[in-house]
Image 1: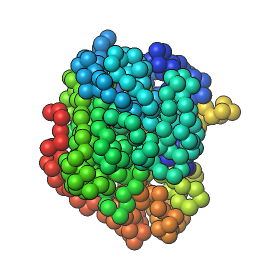
Image 2: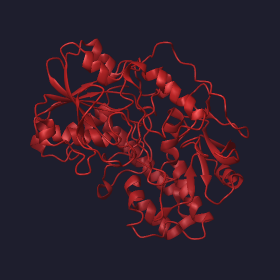
Image 3: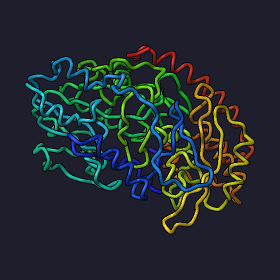
Length: 469
């Protein structure tokens, strides 16, 4: 995933199981007192964030109206409605994280622990652990979870992110319940892919409980992934914004040759069971589901940040001291991925430059928040004004072009080794080479047209994996 500095992107938020929703709101309240990675701006009725131009924000934002009962049944809810038939009597492991909850906010760990006839015997942990309490890039070993007494099998031990034969020993199935955010570099889908590879190689069933793509299922946008740059932040050869749910990606991995790094025979033998949602439509963005957002990582505390991640994650990428475009996401410790600032250029200049671009579906306004010393900090808030016209990734590439214009030296004139993290997130070096060669004169429109053409081909081909219309 894109990150700030070393991109502390995946530290999850987790509350005790039976109080999940209560503590999620408590975390938001703490954020308003400066204890959170980001503070949510106020919302419009369609879920887009609204900025406060000058005044510091000390009052909680008004939540978007939502139904008293969620409109969408998640995969875990459907599994329960089925009487847990797909997992009953099986010894199962569970790959999940803080946002792996049912529609009432109860952790899937707890749901399966209490389910009659279900034998939950192990948990698989990715970066930051099952509860999201470990620092970014902190390695950890297998251990026993003090809360549940279950064995936690680490997929972030510094040696391998793929389950070993020993870790899968004795399991009939691995259940996957992870909340993705619809952007290729967010690594939960990478974790699922590696679990699928290991399970298919060792005759263990994979059961994927589906969840919404928060951005909806109708938009595909941004550069595709070249094989050369496949990595943990680019595991699927899809556009940067891919428009699929996690279960649809699992179907792609199972059915399409070459997605999984296993033999064709192992892929054919591999057993994949998908539990779809009920009530979700591709036209739905997260606010329309009626579901409560549980933070998926410290910088993605709400749907507003999820939208912003797709928009500015690439354009604000920096990996000091090797690679730096000058732009930062957030204003102070607020507006994660929705506010833009620059290390040396005033916000009014950035606002003017961005407004002059007339990017479809976007508008920009300055915001001001206090820093920890109480002094005002300003930035530019990005607002989606037209979801239909909005192209999720375009802003990032305009920021890259703008960086070439305002920096004294073209920031892309660095060795490939210095830009390797950026290139892995981009998934392609073609645009990078153009920026190195042409700088601020790069023909962005030509790249947009090519990516949109290829995205349409991708969407036509990926419809075979759709579970919803």
